[in-house]
Structure formats: C-alpha cells, structure tokens
Amino acid sequence: MREAIIVNKLGKRYSRYHAERPVTIMETVLSGLRRMKPVEYFWALRDVSFTVSPGQMLGILGHNGAGKSTLLQLIGGVGCPDEGRIKVNGRIGALLDLGAGFHGDLTGRENVFVTAVVAGLTRREVARRFDAIVEFAELEQFIDNPVRTYSTGMQMRLAFSVAVHTNPDVLLVDEFLSVGDLAFQAKCLQRIAQLKEAGCAIVLISHSVEQIQELCDYALWLRHGEIVAHGEPAVVAGQYRSEMRSQTQKRTPLRPPQLTQSGVELRVNENRFGSLEIEITEVRLLPLSEINCGDGLSVEIEYLSTQAIDAPIFGITISREDGQVCCDISTEAVGLSLPMIQGKGQITLHFDRLDLGGGQYFVDVGVYEKNWAYAYDYHWHVYSLLIYSPISEKSILSPPIRWEISDLQVPSSKRMFVNKYCEDLY
View 1 (cartoon, one colour):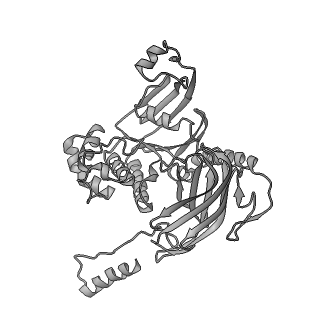
View 2 (cartoon, rainbow, N blue to C red; view 1 turned 60 degrees about the vertical axis):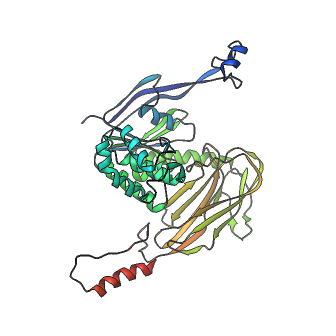
C-alpha cells in the first residue's frame, strides 16, 4: 500500500526585509532601490521528514512560530519548498483557514457550489451532496442569505461542512475545533473519525495535547521549524508537556499561599503555576457553580499585570475528576488577538449552554505567553463545577434529545408519554 503523504527532508526559507522598505513604486524610485534587498534569511522549516498512510492521523504539536501552519500549507500545495520534496497521493481537502474562500456578496448556496467545485467536485456531485452539506452545517434557514450576513461561527460551520463532504483522500486540519458549540464539535469529531475509517489520511494541527493523544495514531513535535520528537502520541505529548511545565516551573517564584477575594486559597506549585508577570486575581463562575445540563455559564476572570505584556493568551479548560478534558478553549483558538495589557482588567468567556453529562467538573484557567512557551498564571483544579443531568455520569455529552416513535403498533398515549417525558427533561 502506497503512502498517502511523503515528506522528505523538507525545508522552507523566508526573507526578512528592512522595516522601512518601500511599499510603492514612487517610494522605490525615490529611495534609489535602497532597502529593497532582504536584511536576512530564516528557515521556517528545516530537514522535516515523515509519512502518513491511508487511514492514519498524524497530530502536529508546537508553539506559535514553530512552522506548523507553514508545513500544512506546503503539503496542501500553497507555496513551494526550498529543500526536499513533498508527494501527496489523492485528492486533498484542506481546512487551513475556514471561511477564507467565501465571497461575502454570494449566498451560502452559491458559495457551497463555488467552494466545492474548486475543491474538485463536479457541479452534479455538489448538487447531490448539497442537502447533506447544509444539514450538517445546521444552516437550512440561512442558506439563501448572503454570507456577509453570517456570523463567524456560521461561516466556519459551512466551510467545515463543505470540506468534509468532498470525500478527500488527504485531509489537512488546522485547529478546526473552534467551530460551533460542544455538540457541533462532537459532530465534527465523528465526521473526522468516519473519514479516517474510510481510508482518509489526516494531518491535524492542535494546541490541545489531549486532543492529539485521543485522536491521532502518531504525533510530531516541531520547534523552530525542526522536529524535536516523532512517534507515539502519548510519548510525544508527554515530552511536549514536560518542556512547557519545565519552563513554567523555572519562572514560578516562591511565594506564600494567597487568598482570592472570594476566599479561594492558591498555593504555588500545588494548584498555581506561572511566572506571575500577569496574575489572575479572581475567578467567578456565573450565575452559580452548580448548574443544570443545558444551562449557560460565564467564566469571569480578573487579572493584574504590573508591566506591559504583549498579546497574552487566555485559556479555559473544563475537565472531569478523572482527568478527561471535555472542553479546551483559548482566545487564540478562536482568532481573538489581545492587545498589549497592563494594570487591572477583566475577561469573560460566555457559554450559551453547556451540554455536559451530570457530575463534578473543574474549570481550570490560565494566561500564557503569546507563543505558549510558558504560563504567566495557571490555576489547576481550584474552581469546581457541579452539573445536574438525567444522562448517566459516564457520558461526556448530554445534548438536547427528543425520542420519536413511528410505524409501531403501540397506543398513541404511550408515544405521547415518551415524547413528553423527554421534553420535560429539557
């Protein structure tokens, strides 16, 4: 069986130019072509080699600037390598920038046809799959509206749906799980698993170590464009975690236990880690730390920065007592770039609804260096969340459900009882 993706000694070099490089023809003429040449060169990727077989998923880890997205773009045919070679066997489906190919003035229907045809389908094939694409994206009521009227989440859902319905032989995925709510993310994961089972080779970029461990057959860790480790996901993820933990612990100052305004005790190197250049001073779960499944939840974080910090990343993770991560969200994952911060501030994450199974959870919060190199402040298993649900605690998800019985020889009163019972649960 031939490999779906072959990357051999891949290298990609970029140029750095002078900050005052001319940007117009007039400026170029007046400057006498000065500052037009590159100041220096740097390698975004160097000596990268690996293969991916049909039906395998490779997960790529690394901090910002490690070369992950550059690697995915080169595999997808965006740009050419300066060293080595890439060979891809089969049709490529790429989720590199969800929604980037949409035209705002065209309707969702028109954009589906344009995007799918560009991806390699015929118009007849798109027409056959159109209803499935729209149903998966959950946009039946909006499909004939201009895409410029869509929210970012709606555009991302539609783009994801188009990409996974082109039946690619190779799927390239760059942080796709920021699309939609928990229920939609679960549906995305299920579709990815179906493609993998059908023989699709998948390359996934993710900042979530847990996601890489759970989904991937192999993992690859990039640092400054070079491979640090390549192999079993658990081993590579462990090495990656160890480096970040080591960098964080090196920067964690010795400090006596502190109490937040609400009386929560924070102990350095027990439930609190980080350099503390930015401090999380208070965390509130609103309206309460005990909610019903399907209720909304807001996580309110107050922070204090004694110095100017450029583009920090805030992250929130919801996990069970057994360590199972149920939700991992960061400002970076949803494309929110924070400005330089200093002094006191507040940031709040709003969940419109949490469809999690009943049980005890922890809401871990952190603020990180802009390249994920280490944590400024991270609170682990400090803030507990209790969720009540009729669904068993063994289930992670507890989405809204409604049983429907048809074509069965049962009394109508019994059918109504089943429907009413399930409706009463929600």
